[in-house]
Length: 142
Image (cartoon, rainbow, N blue to C red; front, side):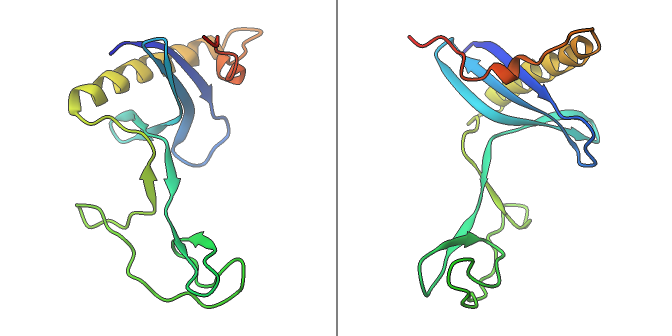
């Protein structure tokens, strides 16, 4: 697998640990968008694109956030359910949409994205800087 392109969108003025968004192109043929670059205790790391987990209302079937007390559609009180937990016992509020299935693939993505993130910080200091991430959708269609 070859990561043929990485596009970074720096996040400015955030109180959170989110540093940037990113998209990667694999083998010039497949794009994965909305990876996040997060500031961690050991430096930046890559979080895979994810979606919020949800539950369906028992009364109307509307999809609500996992922790909703009442349905956002019909207003009925939601049945209390224990939230799903990961292998470490932490509450899972999000599920990955796409992710590597082995450590070597994760390291390949992580190292390339962090390297490009650091280069983007340097480019952002230059006059006339424009993020290439903003041009998403301009990929050549084959």
